[in-house]
Structures are given as C-alpha cells and as structure tokens.
Image (tube, rainbow, N blue to C red):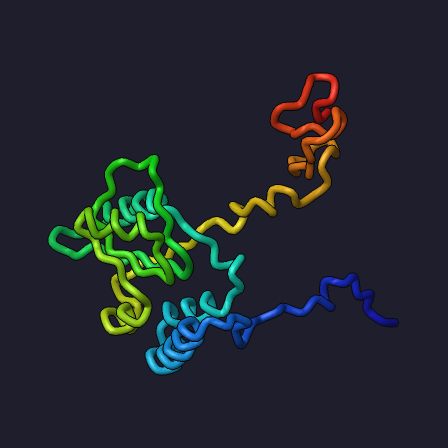
Length: 193
C-alpha cells in the first residue's frame, strides 16, 4: 500500500540563489549583503540579501505617506533622546502629493523619485543608499524594514475571472462598440452584472 500524493507534497519551494537583473549596481549590493549576512550573523542582512534577489515586480514601490505613517507608529515606542530608526526599503520610494507635511525621515532605498528625494531632504531628513547603510548599520541595528504592496500593480487587478459572481477581477475592455464600452462609463443596459 502506498501513500496518495495529492500534489501538495510534490510542490517544490523555489528559492532564488542569483538575480536575473542585469543592473551592475544591484549585483554589487547582492555581493555586499551576502558577505555581511555570512559574517555578521544578523537576520536583517539575510532578509535584505533575499529581497535584493527578487524580481522587479516583487520589489514593489512604496509611497512617502506610507513610510511616514509606519515610522510615526514606530517612534511612539522610542525612549526620550533615542534616535529614530532608519526606514529601509528594498525598492523605490515615490512621492505622495496628498500628504502636505512630511516629518524628518532617514530613509534607505534602491531608488528615490526626484520629488520624493527633494521632499525628504527639504524636511530635514536623509536619503541613504544601501552601501551607505552598510557603513552606518552593518548589523541592521536601529533600522526598520518596510515594503510596498505587491497587489498594487495594474495587472493584478485583472487576475481572476471577470464577470463571475463574487469575482472582483477587472475586465479587459476596449472603447469600441456598445457591447464593449469602458467599464467605468457603461450604459445601464450594458453594465457588468
């Protein structure tokens, strides 16, 4: 008598050991954080190394407002006189025009949009690169890892079967013909039921 394999046992966990990126700077950062992960025995460096290996779609961007909210929550628990932690994002930092005032933040990221960098430095904050972070905090002490929502991409909204009851998948529509009108401005007779 054998054991029934339902398919769950056969699934292999995929772990990336190298990057598919052709960016030489990311490749150098991967080497640096692999070295730090082996030498410092800190979980922070291992996590940063893993996230640097991820694909572009898995390194989702994060907005300035999200960083500000998370860092405000974190700073509530700080003792008096202690320096605020550095927000570390393995991805891009984008500006959010809806937030008028931004606190002084210390942020480390792979890339900053031009307006996000201006606003951080204008508020008395600091924009760091990952090689600068390795000098400031080689073990990841006084840092706070953040990441953006992977489900924020436009393509994710189309995942699933559109039109099926209970499904919130966004249909692919064109603006030609009355049966294929854009889903935002459809006439009542041809709306999604």
